[in-house]
Length: 298
Image 1 (cartoon, helix red, strand yellow):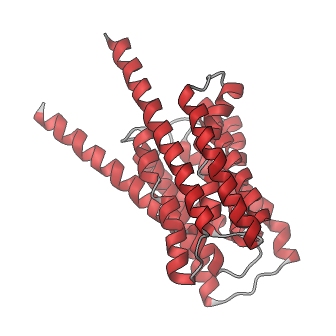
Image 2 (cartoon, helix red, strand yellow):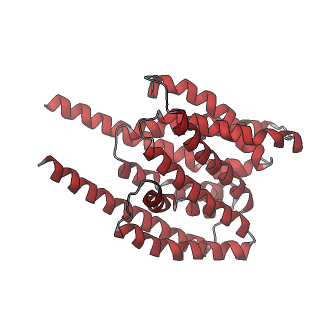
Image 3 (tube, one colour):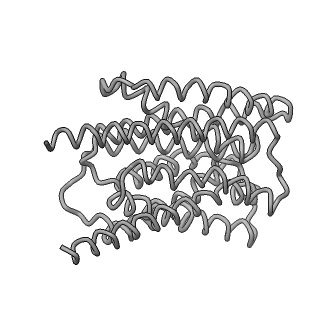
């Protein structure tokens, strides 16, 4: 029994460490997107090419081939996550990194509401309560974007949060599909989208831009996705949600320290509303699920 407890504890710590490292890697996206002076579509496609090869390499260690994946799920979920990544890069070029990541972080609430229509999973009171906090939070962030001329980027960021929420629902609907296959499909969507832009806006190559793309493709996206899938196999969804919450905190911090891009006070206040709403809602939902599981075992 003690040996089993030790194994479980080690697996738990490994899962938590993997999600933490994933969040740190994800948080650097805003900084490196701004460091590359290319058209957003070129950044999206270039880093995704490298991510595909990275995930194919990691697949044999994290999710070895067991059976053919659900092609429909791969294409559907890959499409929505691919669109999310495309919108995220475009938004980062049009507004502050803080605005983008905080507005995209509304995705768990969109997923809860969209699950009602797509999976017939009725939202609970905490999801509606979260919206009451997210609404003012989004208003404050958008007000800051309007003042700084970044309103277009803010709107794109909101849409990316919505598409990220749709992706979560589709993943849940096809939960038996190999997760890394979904990630690979999403990056292929980004690559296909970007191809015409390489002819329209040829990139100006430099050592800095190439190194930034290599870092984003292999580490910030590829390795991070592998760590996320590895971690989710060892800890609960709500634990991962709470750990990943460091991403919207670190993302604007790196940009501030390296590039001096300071979020507006309204954006910081709005972000506090959104983070508090999402985290509290997740904790309440998890507590209800735990009680339901306990009652079913009795």
